[in-house]
Length: 465
Image 1 (cartoon, rainbow, N blue to C red):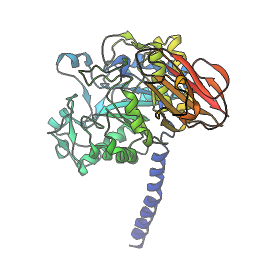
Image 2 (image 1 turned 180 degrees about the horizontal axis):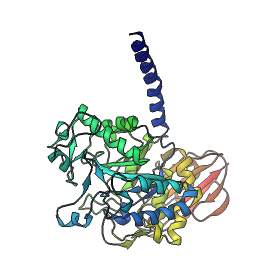
Image 3 (image 1 turned 60 degrees about the horizontal axis):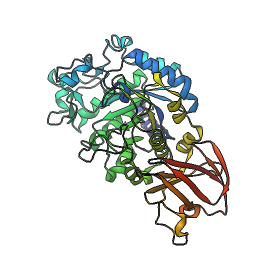
Image 4 (image 1 turned 45 degrees about the horizontal axis):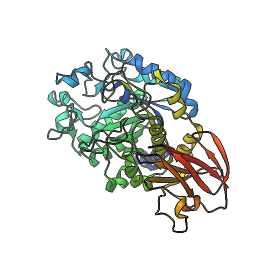
């Protein structure tokens, strides 16, 4: 009896010690905005192992030195016939004896038997990178139809499936009930992903369309119980701003808008896709929620070559102008959004490579703080002739070693010329040593920001005093 009591006490002490450690481990995830590459913008549902590895090789060779570290297989990796999704045909996929999806071996040859994604994760890890996957929340309808057992539990699929709940834009799964069986399902799922060596999970149909707080909490607990530090990213957007505290307590990354593609403005008669200009107000509304371990996500960077099978539209080079591309990367970076390149890295051109490799801009994203929208009404003390800035949007941020940043965006459809006193945006020193971060030019000591910007262009200054 004494031995049994002593064992029970030891178990309680171990739990008391390990629980805070597990929580601390989760809090340390993503101390800076995650950076990497995601397959969706270029491959949609169709990416294969060889295509993924080819992009990983470029990511490791060209972008890893700048801080890019995650390589993510997006939606549909378990589909043997992903092309059928656009033709309302029966989709073919693999599940294991416990109802969990397995990679399609006609696309991921190393995933034979029960290997799953472990060989591909090993490939990514061997190059000093981290491996991520996309999933749709819930449990496969096939597992429910067969009432398969849940791994490491006494439950079966029928005990947890919510057959009244199906993702409105992906019919593969039923939802999961918030009960012990549902928690056991997610525990088993993330035990599998941890065994594969997954470092980043993008869970879809959970942050919006609809918002599923119960499943978010279950997934968070499952990650903690998996024993592996896994960054949790929630999609799609827009995540509800009134749920900011809940998503921050359970995830490191969450989408704040619908999918962003290579256009300046969302069509007036459509809600999809989101345009770059549409992101300004959304990103500003989430700025107070940005902090280490919590990153509102403005979506991937639809830059460079989008193909061979992009997740939206036909294969193409990004339709954004060069000015619009700089605006996108500047806005994402000064607001400290995650930076996930969506273009095909095997076709990375010099312009796009320079755009996503600017070390000063990336430092602003990774090391900035106190970022804010800073566009007050014109100062009445300014000379009336000194400013033509209607439509000018300003953001500021602070960096390390005394750096400060000012981004001035021309969001209009016309050229804009302006001379704006720095004091308007909270800069109080007499003069600042200025550098144009996109043009790589030192501008000397200035008291005013001066530029002639084309439509949709940006001036990005690093300031020191």
